[in-house]
Image 1 (spheres, one colour):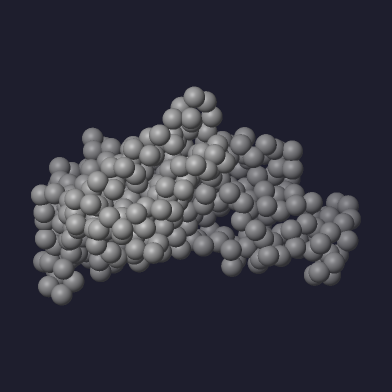
Image 2: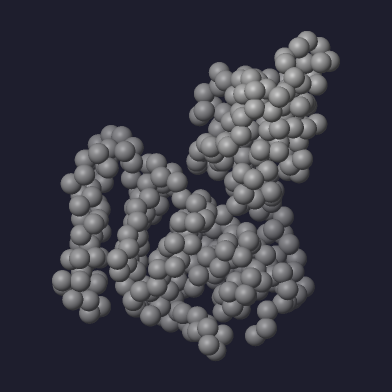
Length: 366
């Protein structure tokens, strides 16, 4: 499995070319279907070549563009180490591949930008959480979503013994003195975590034996530690089980956040408040200028067109083309880059009755 982070997103967004190829497909970790994945991929590559030639790209250019990914067809190790979905991006002198824990619908898109909306669940801070495992022998920090978990490397002493040596921490004693020493150690941990937590709004789940959790809460200055924790020795806990427990704790919070955001939109929209819009042109312009607080977009749909920066106009088109891009995708990208939250969901769950729904930080100038 590969890690997709905000820096990767910015790299993908930076690619601007007449023919940006985005390929998504479901993949399989084991079994007979895994053996069929290279064939499905081969068919998508063949379709991409046909479309590129039809759009006027010379055959020699097409062959050069497709060469890196065609080599994947014969890479048995690559196909034997898949996750739930594969995303491939190709443009002029650039290509990237991501094996990700999302089951994508099969999709091929060619436009002037990469299509990133299927990645929103992984990129957005909505649905993310931290897990901090507390042990006197080993402190560990994880960042997770419903589908993923990976460890963040610590750059400070992560055990009480190491902290004693590097920070002159008093030795491990008994009773009140022991608690004092643990508190001191946790204060050092708290200070060390300060530079590693990328977004202070992401909730954190503590995991550890019951007597350690309240001591860490006393030392901690992070404002978004959840009341419920995972009780038990994290040194003995299976990572998969740890992740499952954290999902059980955080999922109701995320569902409540989405519900509240949806209700807020419906209320503003019902009042005909200018801070709510279902108009795709208004939402795209607002997102470009960082005015979107919350955006709801439908999955597996595209609305074609392009944004003209000089005139600040959104031009809608009926179909894909070299000059067009998915405007739903564009609105999601710009909202995430400007620290807004994006909910990508099935059409039937979308609030309002438009192509999307947006709550604005302040009204957009039409």
